[in-house]
Every structure is written in C-alpha cells, then in structure tokens.
Length: 390
Image (cartoon, helix red, strand yellow):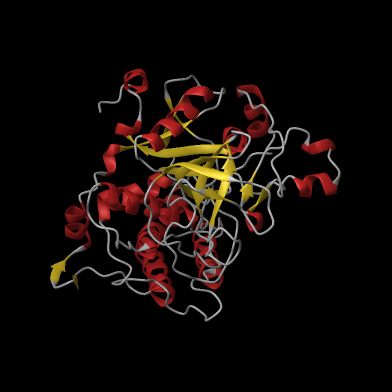
C-alpha cells in the first residue's frame, strides 16, 4: 500500500466538515458540497518521501477512535514507532521465504493493529523517527530502504551457503537505528513513566475490536480470505462481502460516528488530489481532455459501478493497492450525489481542501481494496453473517 510521495508538513484540524454549510473543492469551482456527517479528526500529517501511508492512515483512524472514546483531541501517535517495529517483522518473513515474499515500504492496516496489540505504542513527541530527515522532507526513507533491501538480498542470495541469523539481524537493527533512531523501551510522558505496552494499555484501544472488509468475487462471500496484494506481506485476512453490503457498511459506520480506514487505488487520472476530488465520470474514456478537466470544475454524471466491473478492474491490474487513507465524513453535491470526505497524509499545501478531498461514491465503489472499521460499526445482520460478536 502506497506508492505516492508528497512533502511539506503543516498542522490543520478538519477544515472540510465542521458544519453543514456549503463547501467546495477549489477556487472558482461550481461544486457545492453539503456535509451530512463529520467524524472528528486530528491534524493532517505528512508522510514525506516515504511509502508509509498505511501507518499514517491507521493512526489517524485510531486517533479519531480515541476522540470518540473521550480520550482527548490532542492525541498524536508515533507513525515511525510502528514503522520501526514492523520492519524487522517484514525482514524475518522475507528471509524465511527465501526472498520470495514482499519486502518494501508498504503495508496494511492490520500491520498497525498488530504492532499496537503486541508491541505497544508511543506518542510522536517521544519518538518521531525523523533521524537524518532533511528540511525539504519531514521523512525520507529512500537511502534507508535501499540499504535494507541490499542487506536482505545478500542474506537470501543462493550463493550465500551459510545464513547467520544473529549476524544479519544485528546489522539490520543497526541500519534502522542509524536512520530512524532506537525505539524507546521506557519513556516519560506528561509526568508519567511508561513502556510502549503500558502506554498502549492506557490508551484503551483493543486491536481485536477492528475488522477488515473487502468485496471480490474470486472468493466466497461472508468468508475471510487473504487479499492477494503485494503489500499484504503478513497474509492477513479480510472478510469478503457483496459490494452493496460493503457500501452499506461504510455509510452506516460514518452515520454511527465511526471513521473508516480506506485502502484504495489513487493512480487513476480521475483521482486529482490537487483538485480535491476523486471521481468516476460516466463517459471518461470517450471524453476530450477539456471535458475531463471540466469534471473537476462542476459536477458530472458518475459511472454506475457493479460487482462485475469492479472485479474486472482488480483482475486486470487496473485497480491496485496504492494508498491508505482515513474517511472522516460524508457529503452531497448540489445534484444530490454522495461523496466521502477523505483525510490524506500528504500535508496541507497540495490542494485547497487543507489536505482532504472528496471521493464520489462511484469512485469508492470502484477503487476500494479494503476497509478497516470497528466491529460495532457493522450492522447486526452483517456481523451475524460473518460470525462476529459485537
């Protein structure tokens, strides 16, 4: 998950959906959005020149969960603690699979939940992992990733007749410490002493309360399966449901006051973050370039998406696992078309929506890979079908 690198950090709190008055996506746009539901969120962060959207989006999601739970609105959980903790797990898997598994920056929502459950959490104030960051990028992992890949490639090289686990693990940890810094085992925060595990316990988030849902036809519905995407290196499962029920779950979650972790494809030309929109125009493939541009200035009719169209796009690689984001609300345009309000992790200066954007319902139907939601966000009927106790 995540192939996009954007920079420049800033701090802004939910600019799009503070109330139900009309909003728009950019200056001189004819779009008029009325927010129908808003989930409180923390400030927009910036993943910099990294592929770590999976941790930024997940922790944004969990920070909103903490707000919902009454834990306060100033939470800032450390994305780089999760990255620093997950890398050795990825490396172990890669070596045990003789280099035939994914080792890259990307990851999935359940990776963050796994770290939270098994290793704990720390605030960003305690560990920001920005060691050797540049003034241009808040985070830049290019050199680190190149070094780590080179080290592991040497380990799994068939010419390497003797693998020495303690030796390669030690060098791997040393590289991570050089670039990210050593993650704290003990720390003091706001006058109290913690370990990552005790801090996570105090947060009160139960990682087992969160479920992962998708919708594809190459596996049975209402059963979990491992989504066949490269960054699912841990081979974790998601529940498979029909498309209509996926969409009902998403809108239902928002209306109940729950946010959504959203994994989706953002590499399409009808995804334009700078214009604050992700659309699926009905006649996109036959439109002139001028007409395509007009769709981002005033509402155009959206394509009807069904299960078959969605599946074909996944099967032919048109839809891929590009990016993880955080859905924090819903809105309607002046034509009564539904949109999801999406919090991104590319800073606030790349568009005129303060780092958010509007994704049409058609786009979400078409390009969603999977979602993460609290199990209480599910309808009782769907939870029963999936065998989930709420």
